Image 1 (cartoon, rainbow, N blue to C red):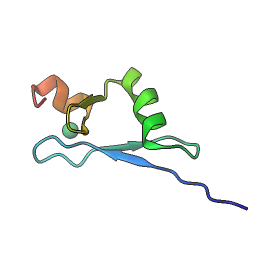
Image 2 (image 1 turned 180 degrees about the vertical axis):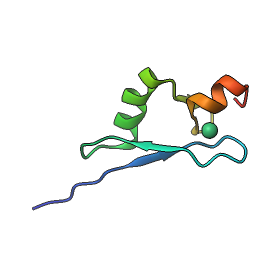
Image 3 (image 1 turned 90 degrees about the horizontal axis):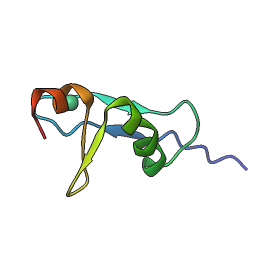
Image 4 (image 1 turned 60 degrees about the vertical axis):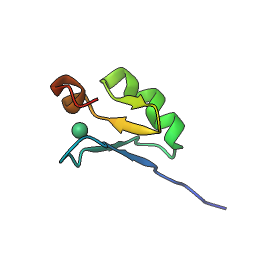
Length: 59
Ligand SMILES: [Zn+2]
């Protein structure tokens, strides 16, 4: 049985369509845990902010 899911998380910054996912089947929680090291942030309310938006102050 195969139910591989490559979950992507999408940046919720203004006018931003950045997204990221892992090269392995993963849940959103796992993606966030790994991408946190790359500069992604999860904000209250479940919003995800990419490194570019974070740096630009869109938090
Ligand atoms: Zn962004």
